[in-house]
Length: 68
Image: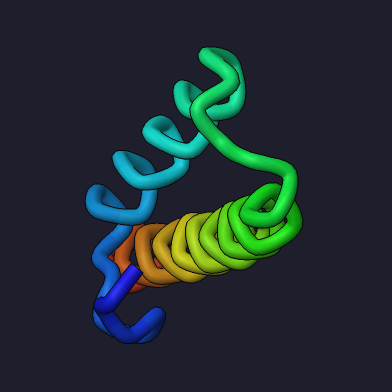
């Protein structure tokens, strides 16, 4: 996790979430790293949710501007 959290794109964040979930399911995460992984996944999920909401707003605005 050497990348800054603000550098993630939606696709990169989703990929990292999937990797964290896979690690947890395969028990590749030790107890010491568990809380950090879960907190990072929660941050990424929030970032993705915010991005989706903003995209929805942008699309709706574009559609409303398109209507004549």
